[in-house]
Length: 356
Image (cartoon, rainbow, N blue to C red):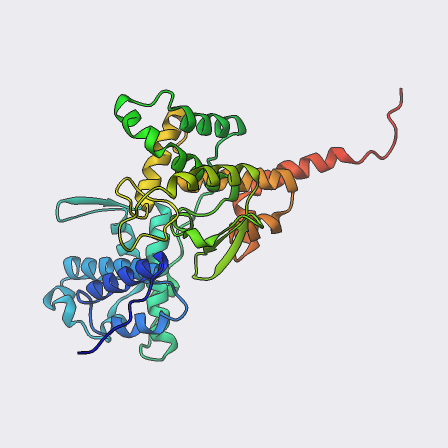
């Protein structure tokens, strides 16, 4: 009988495995030639992004099949690569217009300018692969103009709101009776989790993926897996250290479910906490602090980035700590703050003493 060695898989390995299986399911609904495209991009595109592209490409083929009399005659699974050369620029423009609002299986779907831009980006990548490999003659997706994106205001917590948020987690004040039933048990975990996110700016996926052995209190650092798959060490201050140590004391008395022994943050079921659970707890506490701002884990990240930039004025440091590969991404998000700093610079230099 063949024996297999049991190996410990990380949270990110598990997520990657689920995405790979999900992608295979999606590919079963797409034309066979799509598999070549996804195999060609797997070395440099994350599994999560490949799944998102597969969804978008499926929506495109479903649109063609449902709305175009020519393509309706053939099941989607039987489409051949030559179909890409039959699609025109107008077909793609009409598809983007369709994406603004459509229904499927009784469910409504809407895409704003950013949603349409993502749909077009998926198609451009898809077409570009076959065009560059000289497997098709035309590339109509490259001719379609990207939707104009309007800058969105960065929503963040003000310093006093951050203090109120953490105080709310600590005291449970203004929580409902139902919420208070679980508050005492989860209080230390929630304080540690929110303090860590507000004190480092890490992404929610990076946070839930932290294992116990990733913490280094000698240097006050935590190892995380960044978007893109690479590892990085992020350093934290005293407030984060205290919150983590308080929680770890409670965590040491917990008995995790098998397979979740290494997870830092555990759910009520003693399993690794999920991204959705963190989103829900942020929403729960933030709704007490402000009803006007829609605060999500990503907004906590923006709050940290804003505070760090205001304190240091170093856009490159902010980009590095937040894990932005391109500093222009950071600059785009914090352009308004840069404008404020430039205005301050105008008042910082005095050329001549004022005459009385």
